[in-house]
Length: 546
Image 1 (cartoon, rainbow, N blue to C red):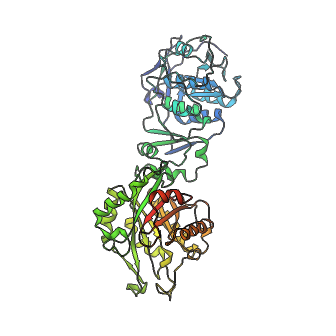
Image 2: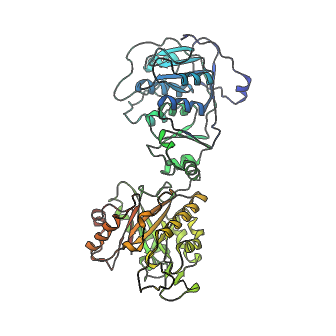
């Protein structure tokens, strides 16, 4: 390995690409300044999902840099050297690569150094680096790195184990801090073997957001992203970009997105999920995924009448306030989710007499429901439209309310009790719906959600008898656009309600969400909020009041 950097001539082509003149470090070594040129990813979404740290570092460098005369290299597995190497890379504005064997012999790293046009390597915590380049070796100490780079590294709190990605993501290129592990490590003595040439930073990638799942294997990639001037959002293991308000906000402001971490490679539908997050639209309570981030408390009924539930016992403004009031007692009881008030509006009402089309169902006009739906949305209240279809099918009725279901805070409920066969009438028998029809609704609602780039929709299946949904264990849970919930509608003595709850849970499939209903008049007694949380186990995601 050579120990002194040869001058690097900067081509006119690279200057025309828009490199800035800001310096990443004064350096002080002999030779002309060298250039780092960033590269905006060519695709809307780039996934870097390598499982090996050295490979992930190379992939991130390829995605975000076109050229870099200086590159920082640290031994793979050396936590102290990697953290301090990240500080140096971000301060200089150059990639951070990892040497997997610590002996400077890795072909992939050598090839990346060649592609970048590197002439000098800053080897942090090592004496050698891959490639036949000038090497400035430094022990993993802030003093040695500052001496070699000319960077004024600020002091920082020690980085706890597991906090590496967040610490590196928080590095500021203009004022980098010297990161060090909480449990020690690094080298206590030694000096830099030389000084780096001055580095001219590349144009910051202000339109690129990097999502980092926190996988330690991607740590060098996080440093490279910050060195390139990209914003980094650490998702703490969450690989669905719809999953938090912060991630949705970050993606909404980005031109391009890089998903960094092995978990993103296994996330099905990552492309459309990114496009959904890019809308910036959020559910009440934040984010674009319903559960387990949220816990809903709903009023049930039909506007204008108290005969069908408590929702209609007051006007829309009164219902908004009542929904807030009924949800409030749950806030101190539910610490791990955001409590959201909700309306469940009966959109189609079962009739014991023939109606238009002879379907035995009154379909409320959209103009009647829209004021309630819009007032709820403005107040941060989620809405579920409940269907009691009589002799028609659920998809046919759902289609009638497409304009409302295209709103981001509106979901759908199916009430099989009121789904009749061709010659049946209400109140003579309890209705039912086959799982095949349920799955047609799943497909219809999921397609609507994806086509309109909407947050996840809630699909509620009301049930208090097993035979109300034959084949329920085969319900389609493969569509991430929809969260399918079984809502236990049993009423009466609490032991009977608990028996129904246990039986319904025993059917499956795994992955359903769950709702519980409290009846003011029919339960004996009706549970208080405290009793609901304490006695209904597992805890439901939705509690409805009727």
